[in-house]
Image 1 (cartoon, rainbow, N blue to C red):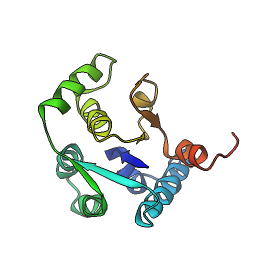
Image 2 (cartoon, rainbow, N blue to C red):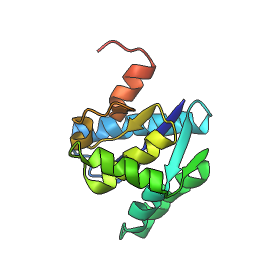
Image 3 (tube, rainbow, N blue to C red):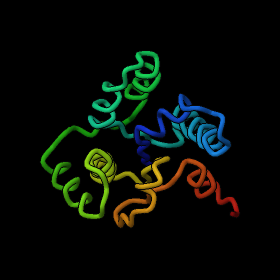
Image 4 (spheres, rainbow, N blue to C red):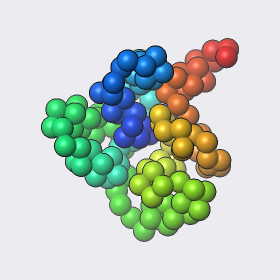
Length: 145
């Protein structure tokens, strides 16, 4: 199963952990990444993840996120197709950078776009399942809600 984690997912363990929701999302995200390392999921990385990560002013956080590029099985490069799909997704009210992330996931044929961004999660994106890390674990493990 191919998955794409967006920048907010990678940074979740580096966020303020004083809120229970952030702690749970962090644990879920770390579980997902553990399963990526065990080859249970195929991770997709993208040029957008590189662009956003390089903009992070904290070197330690940048390095913690960057290691996942080498673990990923697939890489989505910039292309006209990505830009066109991103433009199409922006019409749903998705911010430009987020639309390009989603476009990368769709064009890489990911089954899931995993994010902690509530704005993206509220959008009706037909081509891919957008899901929070906690719900992803529930979904793939067939846990009851």
